[in-house]
Amino acid sequence: MDSYYVLGNPVEHSKSPWIHARFAELTGQAMRYGKRLAPLDGFAATVRELRAEGARGCNVTVPFKFEAHGVATELSPRARLAGACNTLRFDGDAIHGDNTDGVGLVDDIVRNAGVELAGAQVLLVGAGGAAAGVLGPLLEARPARIVVVNRTVGKANELVAHHRALAQAQGVTLEVEPIEAVREPFDVVVNATAASLSGAAVPVAPSVLRAGALAYDMMYGPAAAGFAAWASEHGAVARDGLGMLVEQAAESFFVWRGVRPPAAQVLGELRATLG
Ligand code: ATR
Image (cartoon, rainbow, N blue to C red; front, side, top):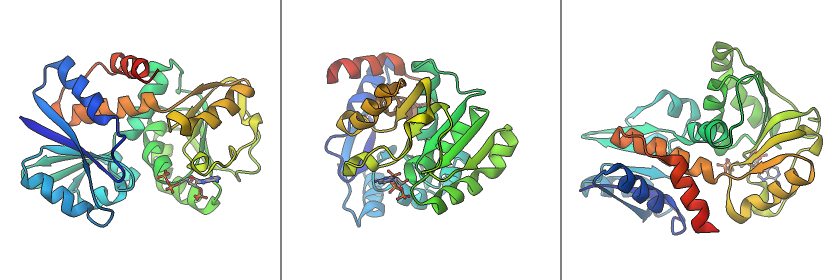
């Protein structure tokens, strides 16, 4: 039976095995999906181990997405743009690297939350790995404008410079503003920072939330609670990243199996399971 894994450190609490088991069941795909803890200094060795065991591919999570980009022998355009991979497919001697995080975010916003990105004003907060993984697909959804803000403004400038050509090709205004100065209202605000992990406050002024705006945190569970409370308090609709998790998994499943699983159904089941 074909086998796949999620590689991370830590990886114990990953929901990917549950999600992919449901996808396989619902689509009749004969496959197994497990989790594998990679030592912090042993990501490449763990990938070699999986390939030697005959695995067909893996998902890659924190903190190995940049290293995964390095071990890939070929890259999808979206993985090249992100500079990081969350999906590897083992094709004989080749390792195909892909990044499905951004498509997962866009699919969750447009399909599951029912919020239009085309023509929208979008604020992306953060310019680390999580933000880099989603900016390309956000641009491809053709909002009117994306503003990137980050505590370290140089990183926002770099990220935007790297995506300048795509923004021009898509006809999207892409700009950086100082994080402490951004005040104007947006339709969609995406939190791609790790601020909540250290208990820090939301790093932007609440006036960035137009009434009824979608305030999206790429995290889920307790890590997303502070941002959600802040958003609701200021008249926005809060959404956590659980749908992004399921949608990026669905896109990875498609990369491996060529079959699209019923992601919305599995998201509903996962939310019910988590209470
Ligand atoms: P990830 O892969 O999760 O994006 P990362 O690359 O370390 O992790 O990026 C973390 C992001 O959260 C960055 O945008 C970071 O801002 P800096 O680039 O200035 O470090 C942001 N971040 C983390 N803690 C923050 C805080 N307390 N306030 C504001 N931004 C924060």
